[in-house]
Length: 158
Image (cartoon, rainbow, N blue to C red):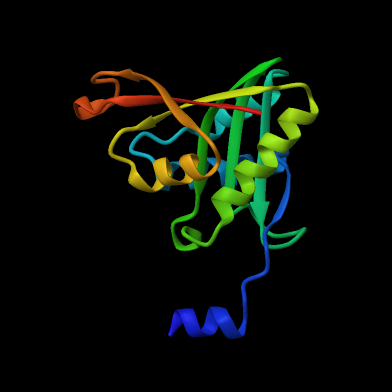
């Protein structure tokens, strides 16, 4: 039924923009639901104040709260994606892919030519997203995550 509704009434693409201080409580709430150890508002405040951090959000309208976000630490010509999250009920709708593609385009406009990130080996959804965006595995950190899961180090040149 959902597929039929999506065909009849396709979802509008998200509005993508730079994150602002007003987004901080929403970013913390999204992160807390997406990860075992969510970052608090104070951590997002510190990150957004850092001149080397770039943050973008996806919303469903100019006055709507974020439904997803991505943050990177940049030292041109390289960047590292620190975190990406989309609210649970909006996943698998292309928001994460659109958001990261937008984010990488903005980084490229600033002179960034390489993006790195770490992803838990067992996170199939994230690994699929990153592969579709052109990331490839360049390393592994054994036992990096709680519970002993490996972290895969991914890289994309653009």
